[in-house]
Length: 105
Image (cartoon, rainbow, N blue to C red; front, top):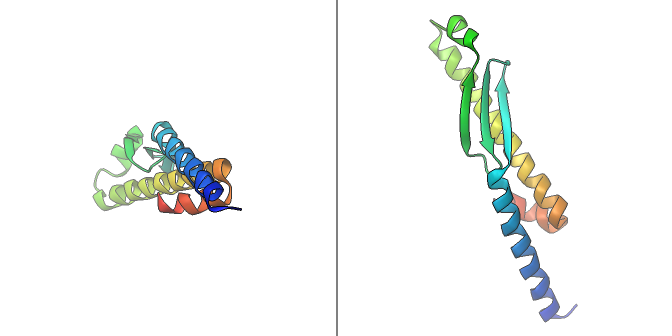
């Protein structure tokens, strides 16, 4: 493969990766903790919303530390799912190159 062709392929991959990054901005995932807390994040892992079931207020009225743990678990779950989504999208669109690029974002 000559250098010029290699550069063209790299430019195509870079353009495709930028398009995927834009799409990930609009895609969402939901992380949960014990079905009581939901955290919505976009494909980049940016937290968009936090939802609490009403029973959380009753069950954790005097257990602030337990509530904080639930929130942390749900946030981490959402971020993990966002990372997996990003890697999946990159791999689907760009193959092996996408997996390498997915680790960079």
